[in-house]
Amino acid sequence: MTEDEPTGRAGSPESDDIAVPQPVGPARQDDGPADAEPAAEPEADVGPEADVEQEVDAEPEAVAEPETSDPLEVPAVAETDAEPEKDAEPGTSDPPEAPAVAETDAEPEKDAVTPKVTVRARRRRDPLAAALIGVLTLLLGFAFAVQVRNVGNDQALSGAREEDLVRILDDLNAREERLREQIGDQRTALGQLTSSDSQSAAALEEARKRAEAIGILNGTVAAEGTGLTMTVRDPEGGVRVADVLDAIQELRGAGAETMQIDGVRVGVSTAVTGTPGHLMIDGHPITTPYEFLVIGSPQNMETAMNIPGGVVPRFTSRGATVDIKQADKVVVDALRPLDTPQYASPDTGN
Amino acid sequence: MIPIIGLAAGVLLGLFLDPTVPLWLQPYLPIAVVAALDAVFGGFRARLDGIFDAKVFVISFVSNVVVAGLIVFLGDQLGVGAQLSTAVVVVLGIRIFGNAAAIRRHVFRA
Picture (cartoon, rainbow over the protein chains, first blue to last red):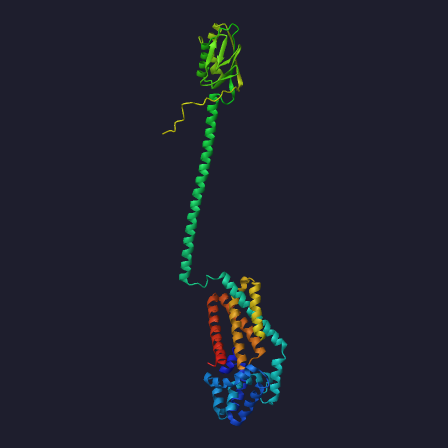
């Protein structure tokens, strides 16, 4: 134990190192002259050892030692006080060397020369001890560095005081709150962007539908659907403008959505002109047989056409024959140029 | 000279390798380090006193570490590991202080 080394000087009686030198102590105390031998022995020991540090230490220690007030030394100093040289030696090297001698020799009564050699041999020629010391100190340095690094990494908070921990916790809580607010803001923004996106998409879809519907009504878009084809043969040329106009109105009244007559699309501003036998729709001449392609409810329109006093009887009374066929798929593919209004502009809604 | 070289090499090794301490060793490593430090201080003081002995140093080093670790282990088993660790550190700290005082007297003569 390390305790042995320091306390060897402190004078704990139960330690191993001290147990043997104690006889030396009393021996010294008994007679002054006898003290000269043990005193001289360490002196010789220290000298040949050529240990610069110890030599340098030796003299000042002699001064320093009395101040330390070690129990063992005080009597020794008191006894050998007469000679300064001897005073220095017991003060410095007596307690230190004596244990060493005791350890190596086990017989303190032996000649002074023998233990000296043994001690020197032991100090200088023990590579095993040196290696062990090196390994142990290496381990200590390694463990020290590892532990310091470990503490620095992981347990920085474990050593902190309570107030610091509370402050750190507060900081972290405030930071968490801020981050949560940020998350909320970002979520809201994301929701707004998404909803506006979908809204604009829906509006776009709506606009497209309306454009299609208006296009069909205006005749700018080809259309298909259930409907009927009505063929009017007028070999005598008796069908008048009013008759065709009535037929168009009657079809619209019966739910016709869009129609074309002899390849001419009928729109909101379509005009029927000309004279019987030379009818024109929107300026395009049509010839018999007049072929009406109408998209709408076939039953409703056919019923409307055959009403007594209605379109078909009127055509028949003009000498024409009417042939109506219902169809699941009627294609109205004639197109009208878009009427761009010259004076009217969309109301902004104000 | 050997101890200083060993210490420096050990510190450098530890810093460069930077190993992670296994969990079972974590309670004992600081205590072991303090105990070993105590042994080293004692050895240094003994050397200044001229009574340094390699055998004593090696044995004291190892037994210091082992005993300190055993005490902490025992404390862990008894549920007072933290208190016993503190006790060991206090005792070793007092000894280190004592050794340091002796070394100081040697080095600064005061």
